[in-house]
Image (cartoon, rainbow, N blue to C red; front, side, top):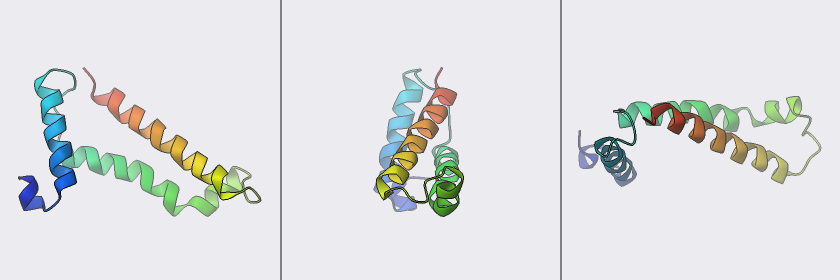
Length: 88
């Protein structure tokens, strides 16, 4: 399905980028939608459970910057995990 049918130019750009990377042999063949679902499903819980994470990480009395740092660290970890998984 084209990006116009999906109605999202970000999807179209990501899909085009992935297709170029696949064609060049840098990454394995991957379905863009499945990749996006994987990314979202690994990142969404961090946002939805931020108060729980604050508690288990002992961050209840820490400024929001520490929580943002934890979220940023998680994003980097997930992106590296996913990208390492599709590299050839």
